[in-house]
Image (cartoon, rainbow, N blue to C red; front, top):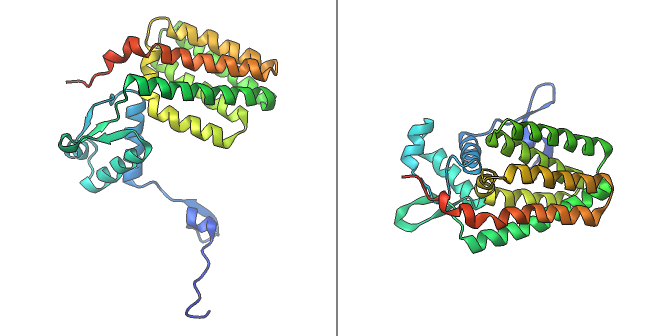
Length: 243
């Protein structure tokens, strides 16, 4: 090999470590990545609430890590739009104004409507059956009065909707925006009557998809998310940081 010639990098090898038997072993996530994922989930499930301060030293103590992976994790959360800097006040979980939040819900409604529309045209029988099965589990969580389980299963339903649409770009945009408004969307689940309404609205979405009616599916999914946005003003005052 010429000294000036750079060896080609195997794309498979870049994804992980090649073992002696030539299999690719996936790289283990770094501590920074693990912490980022943990903090992201804590933001999405409301453990860390909008406006709450993230202290590097406290996070280092809490998770038994040095400051370096903590800084890297927070930097990744900045890139996702989940945290924001407030000058000398430090880093806080991103807090959105009501007008901006409502606009984001409106965009989310359009994206989910498009996914439902495409799912009505493209969903496979197995995908429709999977959505029905998750809907049944959602009904059980409602009957048991378990909003935390209801929220988790509700996310599964929407994930299946995105998959059934068979559109990577639109689905990716929906997932990214869902991350930004996740904490607020979760709080909406806890509002009186919201779980029952969600079940009814999901039923309408599935009926339209099963009937292969794209426009009806679009309208049902769009209205489903818009109704969540309409309830923001009722619970936004409960989302102030904990003392």
